Image 1 (cartoon, helix red, strand yellow):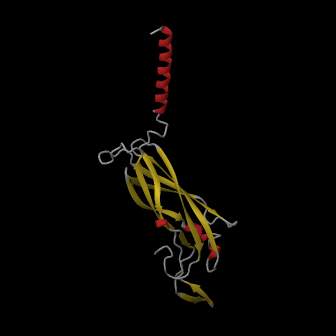
Image 2 (cartoon, rainbow, N blue to C red):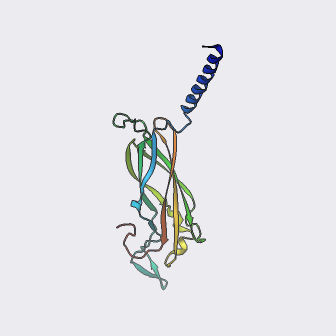
Image 3 (cartoon, rainbow, N blue to C red):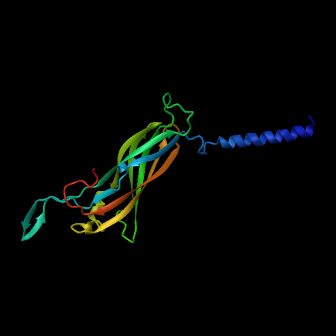
Length: 204
């Protein structure tokens, strides 16, 4: 082999080596063992948020009728989080590599038709472990108690007003064995109103 051909071959080999090393950079997504996402939220149904749970007991104070058993409930929803191996080569039966820990989430509401945002954006903290190649059901806060004590939700009590909104939820956590940060999203339609009766609108 001539010295010229040897030099060319050496340069090509170095270029291939650099390319392989870049592909193995720990900052790339290809060596992540975990693909995490919400596979179900509120059993696939929209959520009905009651701005005031009304009882049936009344009394008179200074000639005025007063409700004594109406109360406010904050809203929690069920989410199913799925964690599957990034590669089918991994054998989750003999390894725990790829376990995911959900540490926090952010809930941001949007509305249509110019309606006032019913709930300010908020974050919640949690500690939910989702082992590799498994699903885990958990409950997260959707509407805090305080949001129903101020307008516009407070002003909807004892009226037929409604607000149709979407809750966009960003989940954050990390792969347990590598501390690799993982973020994913889900959304759900939410109907705010003062629902009458004792039935839970979210139950079948």
